[in-house]
Amino acid sequence: MRYVFILLGIIPAGILLACVQKNNGKANTMSNENDIHSTASNGSSETATFGNGCFWCTEAVFQQLKGVSKVISGYSGGHVENPTYEEVCTKTTGHAEAIQVVFNPSVITYDELLEVFWQTHDPTTLNRQGNDIGPQYRSVIFYHNAEQKEKAEKYKAELDKSGAFTNPIVTAIEPFKNFYAAEDYHQNYYKLNGKAPYCYFVIKPKLEKFEKVFKNKLKAH
Image (tube, rainbow, N blue to C red; front, side, top):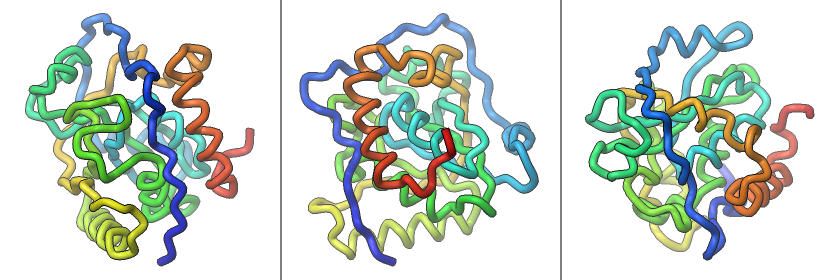
């Protein structure tokens, strides 16, 4: 496997932190595997769950990919049920800001999603992405089955061995145990708030770089 990495996930210094709005206090609901799969637009579908920084950014990236039918922003990997955004921001719930990706494996493979995952954030910074600091911004893959676990561990080991990154990769690889959809205002955030400062100065440049690197994997506009 050959790795040509152009890291897209570094947030410029001085840009305001992500996810600064307050929610409406609405409780979240934990996603169910059957419910997630039922949202796929055609045929066979699988689910991947990733945490790689602010979900406003990661959602916008994965929504662009051919074969991806749905991306949900939420909270995963913690011990508190139905967490609110404010609770997750206290850094005490154990949750990471995460996305669930429903995809058609005949169009885009899990391996290709892993490639996008590792190329669009910095997996060498512990509990941090740019100016976003805290365990909720940790780099983590929540695997749904043994095959996903094996692929994620193999990819991580080969990346470390290849020297693609100067520092060791700190991405955690953990079994999926829960996912709570984030509040409504977090969903489709970039599409609905493209002119907001964080979107314009952080997400937009990141998407432009991503689209150049992965142009053959993008949906037609």
